[in-house]
Image 1 (tube, rainbow, N blue to C red):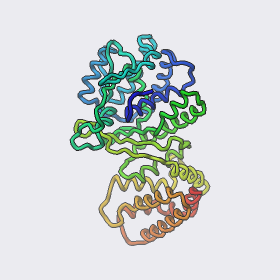
Image 2: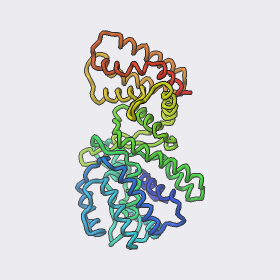
Image 3: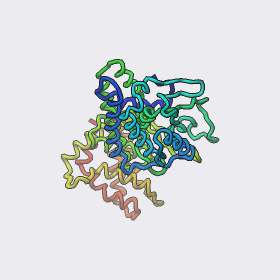
Image 4: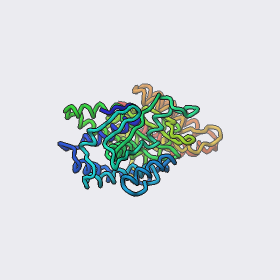
Length: 395
């Protein structure tokens, strides 16, 4: 199907998956333009305040040449804007019948040193953007930034394939903050795509659930901008937000790429497999149970466990140098292990120790900032209704 492997292929497969789940008998210019339009509208909403970095110098020079040949204008200056813009401009080409969707999708030429996707438009292809190409081309934190995955073919894209890449990228895009791109990719998404191509209709419904979860997940990450400094806090906060949105959890496991500029090269500083199925199911039950014990008077009112998670995140963002520092984080770390153990007895023992330790700290004469911050939420956390809700989250 796609004669390449790795990160670029995964991004393309996410784009192709968004197309194959649409209920169309055949892809032609009209249907593909309509599909792209629908995604442009949803992406525009998703990308409000999502952030981006500017094009690298090489990309700016290359895309300026390509855009001049394709559209007789200059490209946007930022990567996320470029991705959205290429889809919109390809829609115009499709509607004006200046390109052929069917021929493009059927054309992939593998040469000695290049792989060409589609048909050159105005005798020109586009190259891969650095935020995709370099992540795959350079080894994770390679000391001298030398290629470590062997000789790579040049990948060239016509407007349609560039748009498919852009749809895949924006589907997986989970924000740009702290100088880092967050991309969330569904593991083995190609399996669903190929199954649907072979006529397995039930796989389409599962893929639709997966893509819906991915949309929820990336949107949460964009809006909340959770820090990945500590995985335990990050995972539990994501699980809490997913539970509120009633996500199915079929998306998991996923791979999270955290990409940032190192020197002049984009590198994946973190590549993490996330499987939040256990913590998501726990949070769904916890949220359902806690409503029986606590009155939430406002829409932004938070359950005691969520308050503890937010305090732990705050402690990590704004560390204090004193006795009993990071009290909430220590509690969250213990809860994380207990929740993911899947065993009620471990959770019971963990809660007992946490409550005993918490009461001991609260009754101490310490005036540390950590203690004062924890004091505000520990009373609610220690209430019987919250403890019962946490325990029932495991049942």
